[in-house]
Length: 148
Image (cartoon, rainbow, N blue to C red; front, side, top):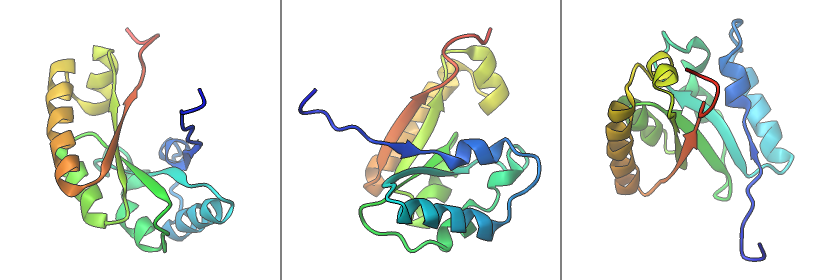
């Protein structure tokens, strides 16, 4: 493992999006600034999904707009479709697009309203947009076990 790089990724987005009570935009931005000040360089910070599906993330652009990001800070924005990818790219703050891919047809249908085949096609189109914009991409293998 001497040539491998290990990234420590802080992921407030995952915790935030499950909360029912909306967290104010300013509080999210303040928390992200505190993580950066504490030395975190890789932050899974926001998602660009339908506000109807995940109301907590409806303000992702506004949250990122309140940050003054250094070049060495990676901001990961989760997307599940091309519209989300376009929103993330437009922020000019997101450096990495994250895409949740599951081998569970049930989870994909419930989480993204996609089949595995549809999800894979969308992933390829998002990857193309990512490459064209000069950003990075990470694909999360989510819910690989335990969901029928």
